[in-house]
Image (tube, rainbow, N blue to C red; front, side, top):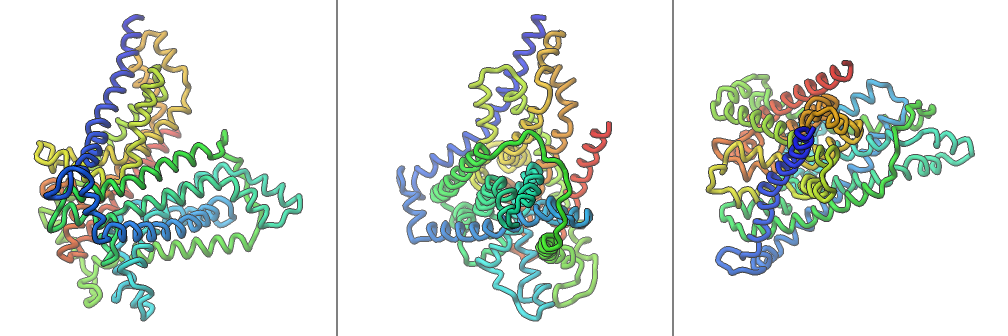
Length: 547
């Protein structure tokens, strides 16, 4: 029994040390170095706030910050109500099941492609020779600048807003709406009191999340930003431009980090203030309402049409000889990509990086969740692990990438796939940890005590009992990390080197040579791989559920 108790203590402490070591070495240390580097001054200057003064001199940074806030605010203001309308159409209408399923699938489709692809797709859809422009006979709007940025950001953040609101709608009890109608309340008042009011917290969270996702994104500005300065584009220019200045770049990174920290704390505040329900609402069919279904179906159809219009260009352009001048179907561009040894290596690197990220991030998130939920460690230790696992949510990918660039340049890890995997793991850790924590909280809390009484160590109980019952959540986390590792661009552009380049960093490089056919072929490859990975993960989860 004493051996089991000793093993029961070693296991949680080992997981505790594993989480803190990785979070300390590859998150806290790099971000701290960025903060210190920003105080060491601009190039040629002394220590102090000279880098910040240089960053704000000339008005470039204030202009970029205001532009980013405007574009991100517009995108969030559009994506939140549209996401609500789409979630309402899926959960609270009598649209056919195939229509609701198709609407959900198309809405989350952009999550399977890198954001930099959205911008190029917008160019080929709404540019002067774009697909939509040729069909209309005139260009709907100027794609370079605020218009293109806003559209790209909306496409990027809409899936997140939709999922947040749709999941919250699972807990909205439709019986209250029936009671309100029976009591004679006008339709608008019943809707406001029984739908909008319970969703006030999730709607606010969707807006905040959408805003800061757009504010910190680099992919869309890199493709359609044009001369419209954004803080992400300015940060890239300072760090990897023709005349890099790491001091000023670090100062800009801190300026990007501070709003993100505020947004992260605000989201946590909204989560604590949100009304909690013990279980999902009864799945009662909504009452018949033709006007409601027509309106929701129209909004859904318009959203699906816009998304498919943008992404159809990705599927059409690379199979044309030379868009838009030689509209002859061809497989030449696809063959050229797979015939290029460099591009084949990039594709292999992406798969290795995605699999490595998914494995390490799942392991790290699982260890952190086990410590905070399934161990008997002191509360202070649990809080420390929880903070280490969630703080990554407030560090933008570009800031983390710059931190890795400053800390690991010149070391054996520099420009290796191992560093790409570590960077991605710490970048994505927050959401996988919360997913695993939520799953483990639902399992029987007495398994570890029973295992200890039977002589099993904590690790044996986790391996034999907890892990099999948490398999569905582990598969979901693995899939989430894999997909995000395939599409991320903001962090890896600073970390990947010539031999460790992944598809998204290669896309940024191909942009300089205007090789858009290759870009779309690589983007389609990412989409196919992510669709296959998602299908396999769903199949594994479904088989486990049936078993």
